[in-house]
Amino acid sequence: MSIEKDKVVSMNYVLKDDQGNVIDQSQDGQFAYLHGANNIIPGLEEALEGKNTGDEITVSIEPAKAYGEHNPEAVQRVPRSQFPADIEIQPGMQFQTQAPNGQIAVVTVAGVEGDEVLLDTNHPLAGKTLNFEVTITDVRDATEEEKAHGHVHGAGGH
Image (cartoon, rainbow, N blue to C red):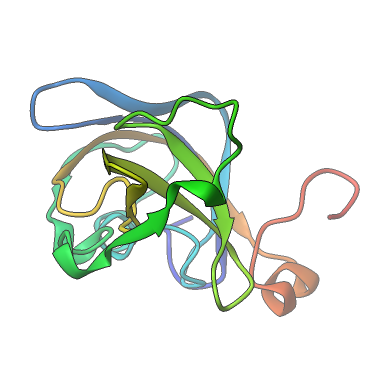
């Protein structure tokens, strides 16, 4: 069965940066997504279109088809007082926050200048080329409920 819209795709993958450092991986066959529902980055979804169970691909995804370019305007200054006083804020630290649309977002401390903390609200992988090694472990038809909800359900439902 080929990967196309409304198919549930299970896969193993290794994600590396351009220096070969592993950023993320799933090697247990448990990573699954609903193809065509914007559940994964567009470039990877495009690369998987038409593939079949057992296929292996290696693909590099440019930022425009992944998490976008790094936007320098997405770095914001916030008062140090908005953070717990007992935490030493350092560049590279990450925090979760609620975005205006209600979703949880990850922000990265870009620097500390006096009483201000510079927060980078770009996705941590913005501006990076993503290198995937993927093995397709299964392709199946999505259930009507999965299609209606726009994502894969596990064994027994949600």
